[in-house]
Image 1 (cartoon, helix red, strand yellow):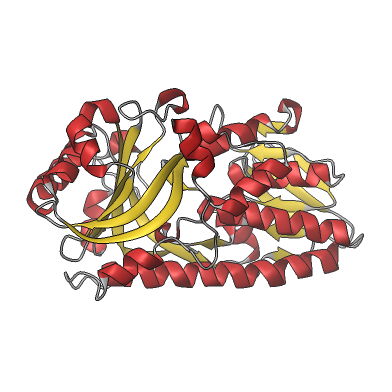
Image 2: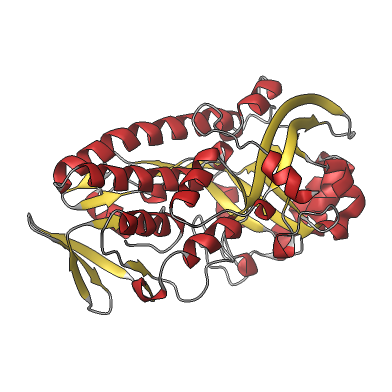
Length: 399
């Protein structure tokens, strides 16, 4: 497994249960828990976590009873009664990491290239280490070294808008958090979209007043604006990804000033309370293949759907499950990878297409809201592709 984030961990655990000797190689050193922010939980994700013994605790999710559209004046314009569960990336990553033995998880290993022939495949690392195997799983993310070698030119495509993200302790915004409640709140400033919701607090605390409040605010940004946002104080441009400490104070201050002008007061206060927001350029990615010889490509290395699908982690889990099941059904790697590729190419394409539909009004930069905000809210996430979780198990724990 190349990549030790959630995709590589899912693949390692599922393949080990199918009888494979698996080793995970991760380029970074240290705990990855600090990555990511809020995420939606699907029933498929929970089923696969249960299958590998990495149980998602009920205390790790917050049940939301509806999606609502909040106008600038704070009034609710539309309510979609839809029960979902929200959590945070770390609440999924941690049990997955704990399920993988420490001795098979090797950090500080940066892949240089892949070599393969009919009988084996090898990962060659920058320190000169060469590891041969029967199968290599590329779970190394959107900037995958493996994909770039096998499919040169297949790169993430910028969607012409960015997302500001932040998370704050609920007690710090008590009055504003009460206005959010147990709902996912949508706001539609002209040509933009913001979502905010409660997620578990420290120690997976779900008690009102002890949770956290998360927001993501999508804003159009053309090429010139993108360069400005992703350039640090020293004048270095970071492309489409910038570490939060290097985001200049001026864009953060401008974003918060716009929040006060364009968002409901309660939501603007939540945005203003986040001292160091994250900034993400929204991209998507489609690969033409997910298998090459003895290499399987999965997760964000193969397909990246925009965050509107709320499906990135669930897709990685489903890719890993399909890969393991295909290999278990056949003693021959070639037909197993062919079956895996056929299934997951179709799923990845549909997920990307759905996320593009949800973000089309942002991408075009017209300054207008979506033609039908109520339909956008109903279709948000991927309800026809990823099944919502019955929130009863989470609500009971919260009480």
